[in-house]
Image 1 (cartoon, rainbow, N blue to C red):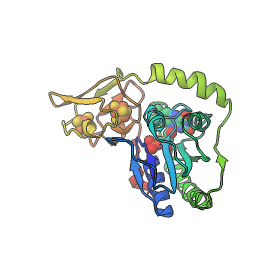
Image 2: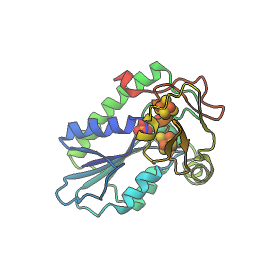
Image 3: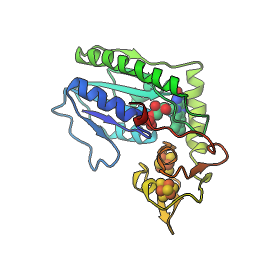
Image 4: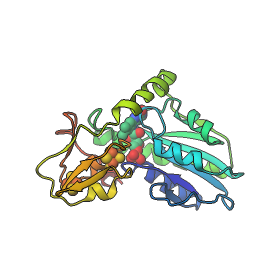
Length: 241
Ligand SMILES: Cc1cc2nc3c(=O)[nH]c(=O)nc-3n(C[C@H](O)[C@H](O)[C@H](O)COP(=O)(O)O)c2cc1C
Ligand code: SF4
Ligand code: SF4
């Protein structure tokens, strides 16, 4: 079984592509009512995006509740560039025989423009090849640590990640343009349950993962975050597959 968390589809695509190659199943951890038993599993995988050189809170909490297993266990993070020490930190919560990072299109629209089309196509092509290799290594139960940690990984995964979780996940800067038509997509799809429609317009609570799904997936491009996101292109993985 391959468990995944995904904001904008990159990690979901990685989990599903790998599951197909391994003849396994990919399961979204959002909305899982109970922690599944791992008794019959040959392999257990955790797939998720990197947030500020760390593991998303949702995946950390899930991994902490997942039972021990004798199955081969692996983690794969998807990131725009580098993952810092995230996989090492996760492996302290849940034993990982293998850890990988895969460079995927950057969805952090609050921080910068998303990648240009050429970069997206190049990253997806490299990711396909890497998944082929990873599937073969998992099939052989080979223990591998192939993670792009980047420069100053300890600083990024400790101090900067702590700052992100403490301060940057605020929902205060979210607002909608008048093009919002009250369709409810953002409320229905928010993995944190942080959005409620009030008088036909979204209102944000505090428990946001900063997954960026609401911003990228609003059919009216009506969701903005402070001054950062206006005019920036939204990311839709399906346009590149
Ligand atoms: C809040 C946030 C923080 C991010 N931090 C990093 C980072 O530290 N390093 C990095 O390489 N990419 C970072 N990214 C980019 C994502 O990890 C990357 O685009 C990922 O593939 C998104 O996966 P998803 O589509 O499954 O959500 C960040 C994205 C978000 C939304
Ligand atoms: S998805 Fe966009 S248009 Fe639909 S309710 Fe949310 S903000 Fe409004
Ligand atoms: S409010 Fe938006 S960014 Fe925050 S968790 Fe929900 S969908 Fe993701």
